[in-house]
Image (cartoon, rainbow, N blue to C red; front, side, top):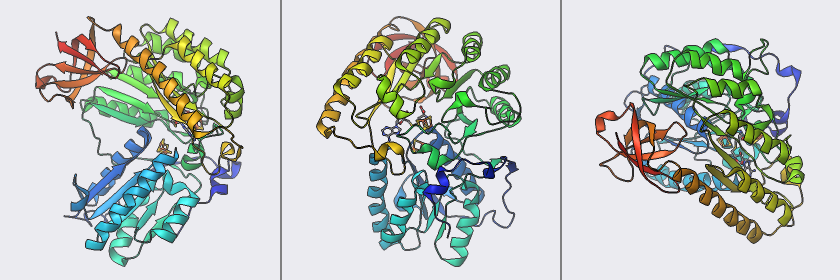
Length: 472
Ligand code: SAH
Ligand code: SF4
Ligand code: F3S
């Protein structure tokens, strides 16, 4: 049993050594060990976790597992968890009750937990004490051990708890079962070294480790050859890509080289404002296949709060960058993340945030109430602001965000834009759906055989969260 340790996870020292690249290969004696068995994965959290689940599915299918949509039919149930806010935690602990009921009826079902919550010392302790029907816990640093762990459970019939606090090497050549045939996530870096004071990610994902450019470019090239139209380069802080590599090769260089592969659409998330260089901006502006869409988290518009958050920029610097992006990248859409109710955020601080929203008129935003995370500096700050005040601020903020989302969509009415059609519309199954270059969801009147292609669409109506259109 290896359990996580918060102190170890917080360390960033030389003893971590240089990150190696290891090539994964399944052990021949593990191939097919779960033949005929069914698996069910529930994924919480960000794109990183979604993509990890694609990796986990790939590993499980090499073992012979077959996917099922219904948990009750599964022999192996896995929760890939998120630790970012308290409600993410609560959802997972709520789901564990359902698993318990199922295990009472079918004791042979294997139940596992992985992802960011599994990296938390307090969570694993609680699981071991109160949820002893969980058979498997593994973390974000040892996904590639999953086949071995499953094998141990199957042959020894005893639970497996293996969570490393220190990130290890970069594992290449892992199998992925991608959810889409047209757009793909591509990791370009793991971990985060920013240590924003409210955020748990640097502890759950370890230190920043950039993938080698050759491995990224080979992956994008292969995706293109397999018919993929779009890649999203993934990392917690993609603008810092390369800063940990020995070679002088950074995000702007990577964007340029990925653009040269000729894949039709390139996106990237998430951009920390701190690392946005002028060179990056000019490459985004000049390469047609790099999409004019940037997620630029603000977090707060108050300089006092930004400082306490450890965000390393001021409101003024953020606004200058915002306008530079708008000016240099034609038709760019910019979205953001905002936290309200950081410890002792005053009404004035909050109004500063509203003021930035009035100035930036975001295309859309994810807004959150601050949630204290164990181990982070902000969780130790005394907080005198009442919950009701925080909720009321969130409402006021959302009202403005929604207003500007609708305004940003209004501009599209009557225009013709390119949409990558991904599938049948969830709202209306006579329609198809997809996203514009600027990441706007469009429900489109078009033939189903347009799925998987980029087509011109005339926008006929706009709402706050989506638009309607027809193929032209
Ligand atoms: N790497 C990304 C953020 C990943 S987390 C970045 O730096 O932009 C996604 C969002 O969750 C953050 O942008 C932040 O707005 C929010 N978030 C993170 N920790 C939080 C916490 N403790 N409470 C509330 N919101 C939080
Ligand atoms: Fe968290 Fe900040 Fe890193 Fe984003 S940049 S993952 S908010 S510590
Ligand atoms: Fe959640 Fe981990 Fe992503 S905490 S937001 S799943 S990196």
